[in-house]
Image 1 (spheres, rainbow, N blue to C red):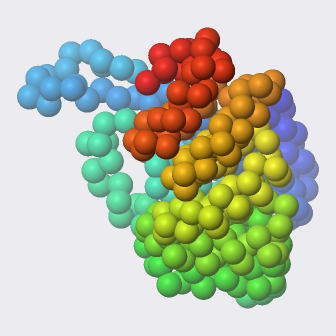
Image 2 (image 1 turned 180 degrees about the vertical axis):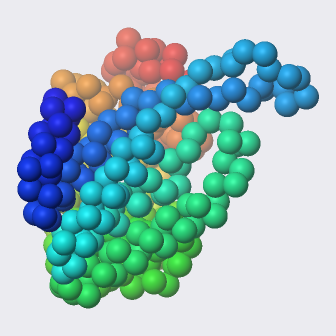
Length: 317
């Protein structure tokens, strides 16, 4: 289906080469194809596991066509911009193409394949940042572009600018769920749980129905030793999204830490007796419950109530 989209876009551009919107559509078709190739690609890796041995034949054969389509997408976006310099969408998509092409984690396989690529990544991400900045000069209140620019700053390890860009996105659009999640993740990756708690607390005021923000608040509170607050936040998250395993897994553990054995058992009984598939994640809770006396008491009661389920979960450790 995507190939048909690419061919149709190419035909339209051939017929009307001075139409920037058609070049934008062609770029998006190429970028979509690049993403498909990246997801399904096989790499060419002819490096031997033993670097001292000459390789007569590849050990594993991989082929990655995504860079070619990213290149074509970038050319199409640049063409659209040359025809219409104030084309915000083209600048944004150009930045997105460079981000996807050069962001961390794009290259896989043997680490030796990544030698010499660091500078290319740096340059590509700088171009992405420049493109997003240009889009914002044209449309400064575009929260989506601020969010994308913040992500690129993070890839470039420009921490202060990353935080500032996320805050700018949220000032423009306070209920921007993705930006709240991204800002929380920045602090989470740095293990700054006081900041995670602060940001998550802000988030749930603006997006009170977002289960993930309540979960983040619960997790940060637990890490900070604020167990009652953690229990409350996990409960909010679980009620909003019952099939999300994180909240109930951690809620029962927190109750056990607080000595509230009956409450912990009640949580896990509700889960085990439900029809949701995610109840098979209970083994994650049991790992933590084994570490405390109250947690072990919870496990014993559940083993008496649900011997077959608990035996099955024990086999996953």
